[in-house]
Length: 88
Image (cartoon, rainbow, N blue to C red):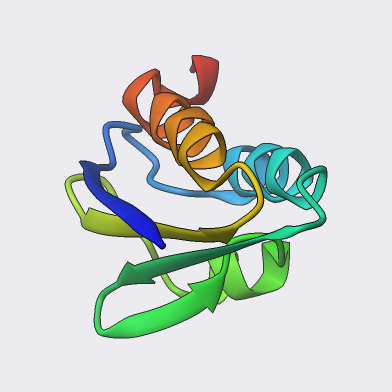
């Protein structure tokens, strides 16, 4: 298992569009579990509704944890999405 802590730089936080983009990208990695830990909650990174329910806002610190096949590559992809602000 590998993990990395990132900060949400999107002004609107992890709203529906970036949450959907993230969940879809992570769902493509079938053999790797992706978990986000934020605001005292732990949610499945492949489940858009769980991501939305976590209320991840601007400036929030998020720990991304990946466990399984190609976990480091998946973690790098996930962190890059947060660090780029999901293209917004």
